[in-house]
Image (cartoon, rainbow, N blue to C red; front, side, top):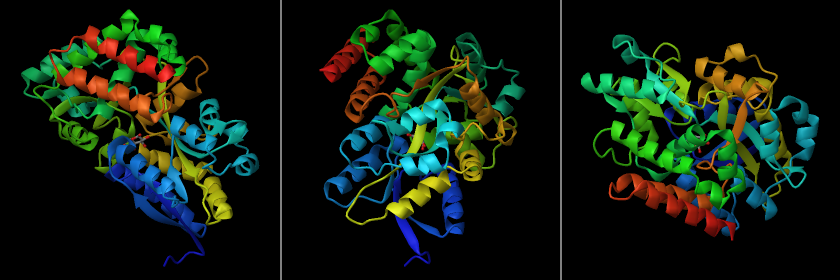
Length: 397
Ligand code: GAL
């Protein structure tokens, strides 16, 4: 029995050290305000397992009270009437005036607010190990040439240039940053938003595939499907020099005692400066026979408060969903992300791999095709591109 007057079951996939630390911030803040958090965490990066368990529970008529449901999955579920609208909470909390436009867009559907936003992750992030950079006097990796130069110096020093995993969602995460780098924000918007097959047939997509193969070669022999935390560990220990991954890696490194600017640094993936490839984490309040509306609304209100936003996001590596926080409270990586989001000249585009732009099955099919491409050296980039075009055509039907 919980000591609280009210408790809510919360299903999510934040089980690594950094993710756990961030969740603990929420749990503590809710606790102070008399609301209990019954944790139903399902391990597995990118929520691959969590979403399956969640679907099963919803179909069985036993949904958790609150769940991390994001992007297209969120809007699809809102269409099915599965989530509690939060318009009153949003109005009382003046979300409209306080939140980034892209955040409001992600939580709005059919004229209603359908989830409470927690934080904005930047996917186009390249992490590198500062000690290695200082020791070998490597160039800040701003261009692919810089990356290539750093990679050969690291290799000579016996260090793996780039940490890598063949896990499909991780390959897809790296690949979308390459689509943005090679195609720019306009082509990317057509690939992700409109999902036009002719855009997927563009020569720049082929270049992104070739770049993907090159990056995997930088990782050395058959890296396997290691968890993202294992790649972060290689970077932390200086066994690998670089890692391209969403900025939750920063939260993880911090949880292990590392500091941005001292032990590791971030740069936007080359050719993506002033661009923000985002994934917004959101908590949806699920409808069920158990009437919990008041507690669910209270949770949504608390997690979006400025102080809670700051505490949670500082630990998570992401940035607050609000524009009215003090960016000097954020670390170097987070501040660059927040400022890029806040800058009117920036291009802000949605993640395909993290459900912001494609539905669950399309993003899985794309990730699967990319996984096959990187693990089969016989498969040409041209063939891989045909697969991608076919998937997008199929989804458009
Ligand atoms: C993303 C999620 C992040 C992070 C990551 C790794 O999908 O938005 O919060 O936890 O997966 O599991």
